[in-house]
Image (cartoon, rainbow, N blue to C red; front, side, top):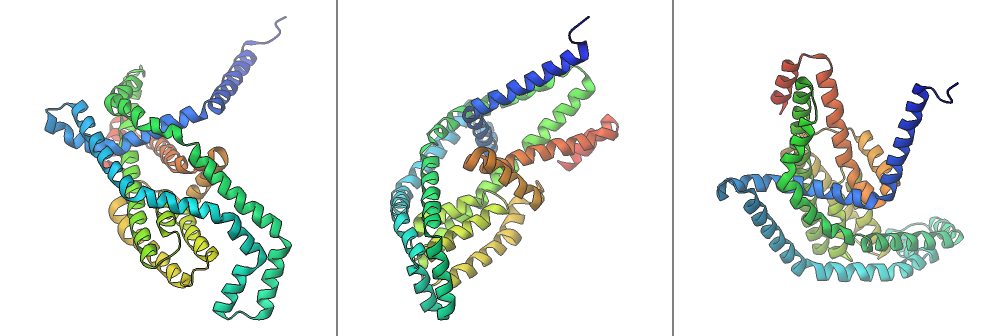
Length: 357
């Protein structure tokens, strides 16, 4: 009598392979994320490389080299102009975090705000009593948040490998796609895979470039406004708030909370006007700049975005949050493609795909 039948053995083998794959992903998550960032970076540079390639008689290597030189020059210029002040203000803010935590828990900041806005003595006393009762928790939470942010930034040295790895994806990306397509034996399925890869390349590339442009625009506008309004640590908080706008729906909310939170903790006196500006800027981004830049390249429901951001943060921390939206975009493309090709004949499927593109 056999100890295991064939079906049971196959099921156990599949479960074992799946467990080994999860173990590999868990063990090599940093390398995998590095390669994912390299792929996304290659998507961002694909459009300028493709436009410059005809100028060099079709030489893709020359186009990649020129794009990288331009990117390096812009990066050096930005770092030379902005990096010293951003770093200095960020370090000062982190060094002051214990003092700010003490002021919050001790009620000094609440006392200042209550005096400026005419709060009643009863309201002020209740808030101060609550803060005093939870003083230890508040201090620990703020210090833990600052330490985690510092450790996250210090642990991102491996991102320096991203531009190097992206060169290989830019140079041989089409070859990788051809390998995947040619691995499919059936001609009909090969056409489906080819159309899917083409659609994914187009939609993901457009989405990432549009999100990056919106984020850079937010960094510039918010930083200029905060600096003009003399908000404390504007040079550090403004770029951070703008960078968070790379995450749809959730990112702008976190950026606004960051700006208002730093302004409140440092005793800034014109938070109301900053709040009005953030509301106005949100409307401009959502109804003016985003429709023009993003168009309708990719639609994600806000609930799906919220789920992706929370799940990404739980799995991969800050890196997981930034990767969650591109991952959702990829899953949406695959789901849309599967629905598209499920019922119609092959020629109708391909015709529909290219019409949509």
